[in-house]
Structures are given as C-alpha cells and as structure tokens.
Image (tube, rainbow, N blue to C red; front, side, top):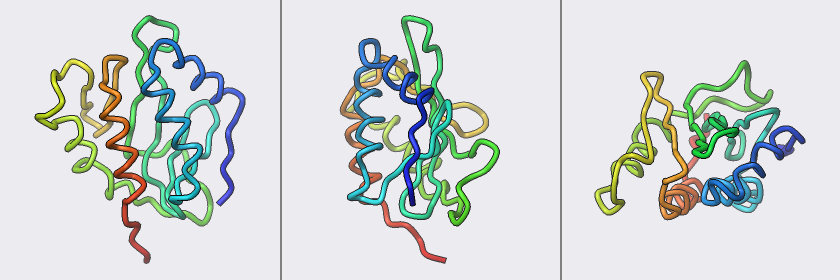
Length: 145
C-alpha cells in the first residue's frame, strides 16, 4: 500500500520533537517501517496499518500545551483505506495493555485508558515503552482472511 504523509500530520508530529521526543521518534519509526510492513495514512492524525490491515488510529493531544500526548485507538476515523481490513483486535486491548501495565516500567501517570478502549500516552512515557511497542508491531503476525 502507498503511505501518505500530509503536511498537517508532519507538522503535528514535528511539534513533538522537543516536548515529547519519544513519541516523535516512534512516529518517525512507524513512517520508516515499510521493511516490516508498517505504513501510515495521514491527514491531521494517522491510521496505522501493517500490510493490508488497519491496526490503530493515532491522534495528537495537547500539542499547544507543555504536556502533549498521543492517543492510540482501536477505532478508525471515518474510514480505512480501500482494500484493507480492520484488524485492530490484534493490538487492542491485550497487547497495548501489556505495555502500559508492565511492572518493569515505573509509574502509571504517563498513560491512561479511556472507556472507548483508547490509550493516551503522555510526555512522561518512558522511551522504552515506545521501542518495545515498535518491536512488537514489527513482529506482529497479520491474519489473512
């Protein structure tokens, strides 16, 4: 599939460079994930895909404040790319939940879970969480219909 990175999304991503470098690197790594089948389709926010499967909607939060956030949601925004299928259940809630509830990662004030199953990652999120999540995404087995 063809990755599409909009100027608005790139601006939002780059706004994180100084205030939330872990999230900024994570998003750049996702953009450069073609070797493992990862790709993004963006407008203001992003849909994350692996091969022909939608995995997560990634939203930006609080960009204008000192404590920005990114939100990973199992629910896509409006629609997904034609020819893809919704496989977000491969990531939510179990896999994402495993990373945020990892006893080896100190604290819990860096994340929250909403009633719709989305996970918010705040600027205090340890960079190791993003690296571990990226590694898991790279090795995630996509089910074929």
